Length: 311
Image (cartoon, rainbow, N blue to C red; front, top):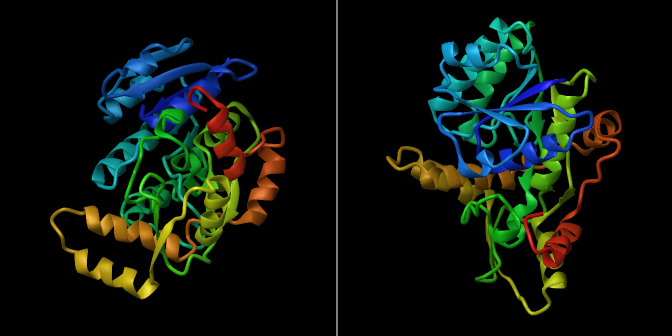
């Protein structure tokens, strides 16, 4: 039986654990975190191991693990420290030679500089992985999570307004760019299914793996939302690429990085960097995810309307 370790017990991890729990053949699930969390404590077929993410702690906990998934998100050096320790621990482990670092971005091959807070964190870890050949790894990306289209009680994913440009309650949308730039959306459930499939399969990984529920534009999203909710008439504001660059410059040295990070995410939208390469999506779907159906936005919203629980 394969043993899969999931590090970082946040929102996306709930989907990954649920999908791993239903894997066939079954897998053993190890949960790594600095503290236990109530939702995860209630999951069957899981083993919790408390870690401070030091090399010593991770080396001990990964000794009997086959694959490690990191879902740790941080825009500061904590990301680097943790992932450097994971790489070292995987090298030391007699078994854990497959590793998926925390990524979840867009087209990071064409746009490695977006979002900009990934450059000193994600891209630095990517370089470390490229410089070694002891661990098999893949960088997994899906664009935006489409969960932000549905009510909060139908998803594990916490709301992230105003980073997410659409506010359905206020009927407003703040579109970075022209609104014609390509944007990819994928549900967290489908991302969980894909990650569970990758770690439970022995098919060799490509360096970059992409999935997509739907690639569209923000202007098309407006039309879709007004079709699904005919009583809503969205108030639209646009910010040009030049204006977004000005925002970035204005907040570059702020003590509180909130506005700067918002500018980084807006530029991720406005440059088309959040759209994953669809040619690779189709190719990799056949190779890795042939029997997984990836929902588009309308299907996902309609499913949430009919559901009485998290989807």
